[in-house]
Image (cartoon, rainbow, N blue to C red; front, side):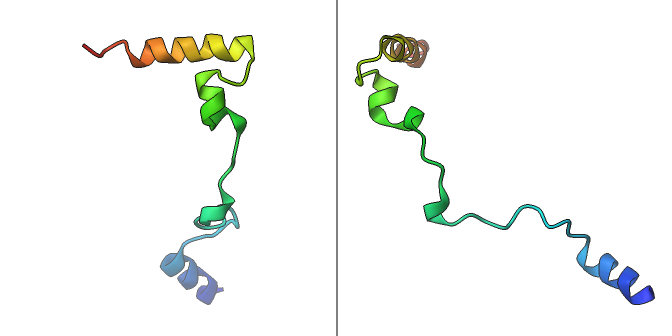
Length: 63
């Protein structure tokens, strides 16, 4: 019992979550981050509208 308590004091408690750092290849790839979708070039009207709003927001504080 005392060994368990001592090891908790020294090492902390691990609940088995987190999994450590991710590797480079484990990144989540979504269409929303690809250039065609950001610029609205893939043909969707709503994507073009969103791209227009993104451009306006990006240019808001530029002089």
